Image (cartoon, rainbow, N blue to C red; front, side, top):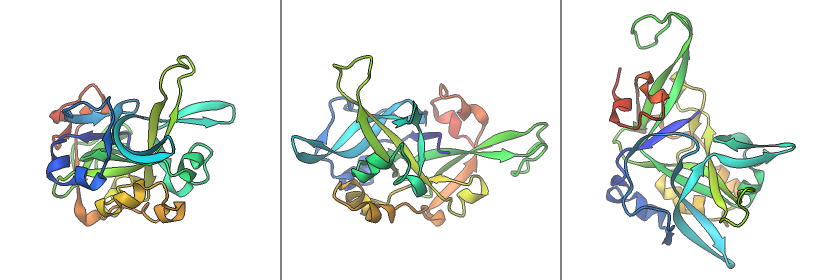
Length: 246
C-alpha cells in the first residue's frame, strides 16, 4: 500500500508552518531552491525528506532528497523496500538496524493513493458494472488540504558499482492499520506523524518504544477520500488530471 503520493502544493509547507515544525538545521545541496509540484510520485523517485544525520560525532537535522525504496538486505538477496509494516519494523531483518539506530525520517506530502480490490461486476461507488476483477484507485488528503508528513525509516548505502561515490540515502514509508475512512478501501494506510510529534520522531535519542507509540492510524475525521480514474496507474501522468473525481 501507499505506492504513490503527491506534494501538489509545496508552497504550503512554509505557509502552513510545516517547515518550521520540521526545524531543520541544514539543507542538502541536492535540494532545489524551488520545489516543483508532484502529483504522482512513484517508488524509485528522489523526494524531499527530513532526517537527523550524524557527521563527525554531531547529529544535525537536515532537509534533503532521498530515494523512495529502502535498500534492504536479506540473507542471500537484496531488495528495495517501498513500505514497511510498523508492527514488525523493530524485528524485520530489512528494517531493524535502521529502527534501532533511530534512523527515522519524515516525508512531506499532501495526497496519497490507495487501490481497492473489487470483485467481478462490482463497483462500490455505484458506477458502471465491471466485467472483470480490478483495482479501483482512490485519493486521500486532509480535510483542509494542508500538507502532512509520512513517518519512514532510512539508511545510507554505497553503490557497489561506484564505490567512490557518496552514499545514497533510501527510505521506506511505514504503514499501519487503517482508520475508519481508509478501512472501506484498503487494509493498511501510511503512518502520518502529527507536527507536535516531529521533534520526538526525528530525535535519534528518542527510545524506539516511545517512537513506536506514534505508529497508530491518523484520525479519520481529519481526512477525506474520493474515487479517481486509473490514469494515476501510470507514473508518467504527473499532473492534476490524476486527482479528478470519477
